[in-house]
Image (cartoon, rainbow, N blue to C red):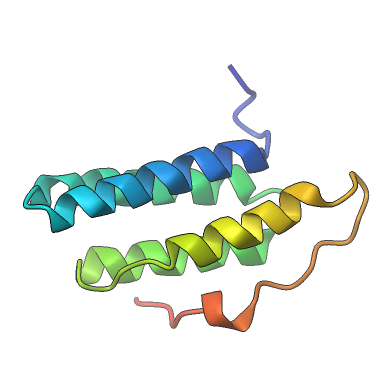
Length: 108
């Protein structure tokens, strides 16, 4: 089991994919799956926090918007695509900024 402080882009991918699957189930008549969406987005956020704070905050804002209203679909494919970009970078590379289309307003 990975260390709690360890950031893992593969784990981010896993949690984003699980959140996307759970979101689909909420749309198919299983509203209780919204809790799994929220939990998996929170886990994805936690996994990337140490390596790329702005990406963690982007995931957080998607999670909080969804939590406020389940009609606010997170940009799963955009988040996954950006995560894939980060995964492909060499070990000591400078991380790119989060794409503007993934930045959503924060909800307090």
